[in-house]
Image (cartoon, rainbow, N blue to C red; front, side, top):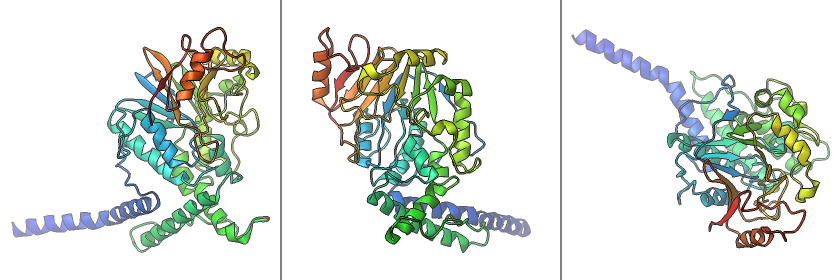
Length: 400
């Protein structure tokens, strides 16, 4: 009996020792996450892997919220989520079964890029536990940063990544002390020490940002590879810039998986062709010009006709100073209001779609309501693609 008990204790002790490396790795990752973001991420039920298929088409939920470009402004990002009743006073998910789509462009122009990425990841995990979901898209600025194009990076943005680089390095050193763990990969491997035309004082920061965001980088792989590039929810098509018929013919699922594979380091350094140039899915502006008369409505109609059941295309990318609005009989909905202080510091607005009651805009801007009322009748100004109450979204004033 004593021998049996001793054997069980030895087996239990052995199992505990075998688990120590993975437990240490998990602890270090949590330590680094908190040091960088100030957040403890909830446990993830089923971690995404590069092999997991991406879902491009979703059925229409009872309530759908669309949020535009965030560009490194954490406080404005939180205001947008509060506006839609998605987070409580402690920034925890309270949106129930709501489906939320963030249209891309989280990075650049501000100093809270990583904090927003962590914040969105936290909400994704919390939403799933309540029967909701948060789906994030790639914008042109995500694509640019993975390619190493940092034209719109701010000094505060560089500083934030320096903080990440320091703590990530500390975490790797801690892991390297554990014999049961594989030696951590050096994220800086192959990155030059200096760059032509870049002042020496910024070179380390540029190296750190490249290390984090290049294909298969720790940040790009963790936060951006799980993004979609094109999404269909019910009768709404979501894309950062816009879609052309050639993109639909190429295959929406194919686009999502190829971009994911590229970000995961499986398809070279340069992004796919459909992510580059003025007619790219993340750069197109044919349907987002603030003057509705400049939008190619016949082309949009043709594109939507190639996507079964699609009634509208919802886009970011182009700032709408008048707020969220529609063009082409509300077949084009433009939701980038430039809310970031790095853009035009616009008041947050979000688009709400109810399965039974249609579309409306949630806004903290009282002037938005006045504008819609003044243009809702026959005397509305020509060229302004405003959301007309009788045909499209109804603006609702909500204090942020």
